[in-house]
Image (cartoon, rainbow over all chains, first blue to last red; front, side):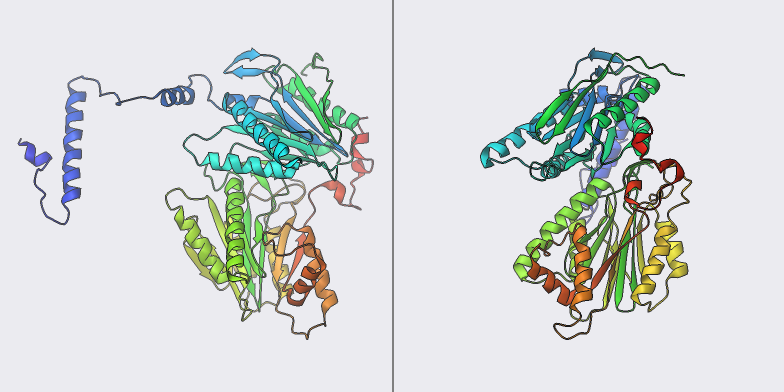
Amino acid sequence: MSKGLWAPRQPPSAWCWNLAWQAGHARAFRLKLQVRVASGQPELPPKQASWTELAKSINNHHPIFPHAFNATMEVLLGITGKDFTLIAASKAAMRGVTILKASDDKTRQLNKHTLMAFNGEAGDTVQFAEYIQANAQLYSMRNDTDLSPSALANFVRGELASSLRSRKPYNVNLLLGGVDPITHKPSLYWLDYLAALAPVPYAAHGYAQYYCLSILDKHHHPDITLVQGMKLLNLCTDELKRRLPIDFKGMIVKAVTKDGIVDMEIDNDKVVKCA
Amino acid sequence: MSSPFSINGGAAVAMVGKDCVAIACDLRLGLQALTVSNNFPKIFQYGDNVFLGLTGLATDVSTVSDLFRYKVNMYRLREERHIAPKTFANLVSSSLYERRFGPYFVSPVVAGLEPKTGAPFICGFDSIGCIDFAKDFIVSGTASEQLFGMCESLWEPDMVYLDAFFVMRGCLLIMMPEPRCALRDHITGAPQRRRPRCSLRLGRPRLHHREGQGHKAVAEGAAGLEGFRSGGGHRGSEGTNISVMAERAIYGVVTIGHSETPWSRPHQETSHQAQAPWELWQ
């Protein structure tokens, strides 16, 4: 069969020459491919596979776990009270089913009165959190005043939202807790990797949401003290230890108050038996 | 369920009455079946008498509402007047079509009164900006089928604004099931054991009074607005702005349903919550 039939050199008519030209070439290519496949030759590999593409394809087609596994298994909790915001994060740094570290701190302090906890894709999390942290500190240095938690939450949302529509979005879920430096009002913001922002009295991320939100619905009250807040947090972590199929290696707990951010003691060695 | 339009859930409805419009939305933010927040308003104000309801992907609701706040603020600086609903509808349409091949996943609804005539105006859009003008009502969001049913049966022409309010309330309450449903669960996007608070805004006919009269009632209406987050930004905290608003206030804000949390309901404690809940486990 003559080649001209499949890939015409001459346009058949002036007004549709481009379409016909391309269609002819596409047909010729398909034919070549069929010949290759029929004769047992492998298909030609793509011209270039970049490292990022390769890494992405491995991550997306992991044989055991989807790449979102970390984000759902890592625990983030936040509770506001009368004059404080509690932020808790699990200590396990995971890759697939393997725990790489049992003392990971998934929080960053943005300024004196604001703390951010994060989980998500390894690499994205710390990169994004420290980018936000640096910008918050730059603002504080330039203006001799701190951004309020609500201002920071909206800044973070803007950065995450513009990243969402970029070539490689950050895959990070965040809790942003703070106490307003002027009014001393505690606040907590829930942000997911899609940059949906919601102010909430208490929040969680990942599978912890399914266990903890109902407990917090029942027992939370906006006027609780820090001691009561820690008791409430213990209710949540006990339930997680009881029901989550993995050991998340305990929690790091920090409290934001008007005097700054303090580390809270929590008994991570407590054994909770499942019924 | 994995459609970006139905991940977060939500519904909005706008309706025309006699010389008035009403627009309402639910306040839920969810992740499929899980309710994350009951404090996520989807109606934004962009002028004296222009409201935009946005349902769909929550991140795009925020992004698009912020984008229009910027665009409308620029319009007001340039033109030194508020934007009219028809103008705003065309702005929404062209802004959405700019993203024809990578759209914002929102279904907007515009409601307002024309500034010169006071004529009611509502319209809806698809996510790429095709305008759907309507004389009666517009629904959008994950409960749009249910809202269509309620609107078809309850809406009638030339409702005065109180009637419009009650019809609107009926439309929104139908989305919410009995209090026995699971707390963090949903069917249509809005339901919840404690009904999520709905925000409902009514455009009222222009008050025909001479200057200096009728201030009190209208000023109360304007004061009631202070608690709401407004996209308009024209309403400052200064007293003068309030009084200007009072002269031309043409809307009221009504909150229906229960508020977000049980403790802000004063005299509705159930028997097991008579004691403060956190004392039970102390």
